[in-house]
Image (cartoon, rainbow, N blue to C red; front, side, top):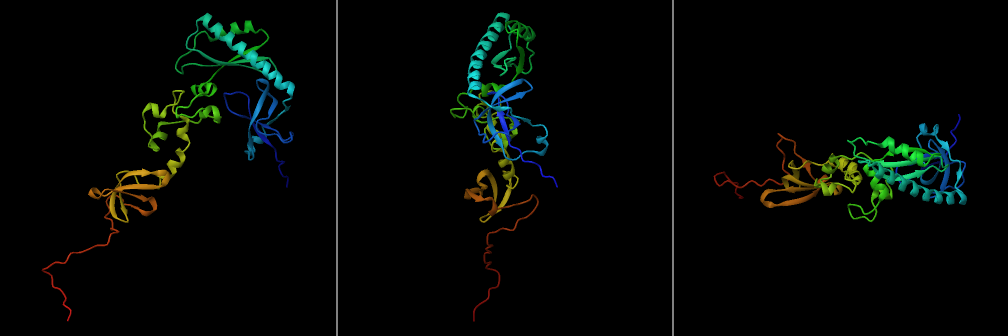
Amino acid sequence: MNQEVPIFVVGVRFSKIGKNYYFNASHLNEIQLGDFIVVETSRGWQLGEVAEILHEIDPAMRQNLKKIDRRATPVDLLKKQELNLKEDEALAKSLQKQRMMNIRGLKIVTAEYGFDEKSISILFSSPEDEEVKGLEKLQKALRDEFPKMRIDFHKIGPRDVAKFYGGLGACGLETRCCTRFLDDFQSISIKMAKIQDISLTPSDITGMCDRLRCCLNYEFSQYEEILQGLPKRNQRVLTPNGEGKVVDLIPLQEKVVVEFGEEGEKTYDAKDIKKIEPGTIPKSSKPQIHPINSSSPQKRNN
């Protein structure tokens, strides 16, 4: 039986914005996170940084993986510094042309040079429900400025814009999560905030990108799984102290707060209580004490 030859796969980041792209690095010895490599992509030759190392890969991924060409040399890294200066120049020229042509509804974020200096990618954002008028004219004007370059415009979302600029997080962290480690933005819904009992006040659930905070997804699945085994608020339950009503939940501790009317509230581990299904009469866990009826006959000790 033929055994598959193990391959070494790395995720490479080419830009501050966007996801990691995966390549076969089996032929490179001792490659590590933070190493720079050169590889040919659909956008030409690019220099990227190793941002991820995969120890397990989907078998379907093996067939489409391209090999990394080489590790970046000191000459490659010096060239990248020079390209950074050219990118600043291209960005400044793009902003100047936009102002001169009075193109509104367009926010140019950055310009990226291909490592082979054959293309310039202009990354921009704009309102989702508005069409940017004059984009083709701006592209033509930049082609006249850089006649030997292919000029591409790529629209990015508000989360990508926040990732690019970085800065203080809405929660107070010195660097936003998107800038620090998020490579792929998950779909976030208001349901995630409701499940975790987070205030729905916009300032509490909205990030600096004016979208729902990515961190709403961090513990959502854990909350969702735990809550399946807990009673709901206002449900009647049987506790070691008798029957009561659930008034609050502490999901991550798997605890339930139960109210007993005038006797107040008590907190229990979820395993120590039992749900009372509607329409059933529970058997109390408290010992039953029957008062003595004076009219009933009593046994006397002889």
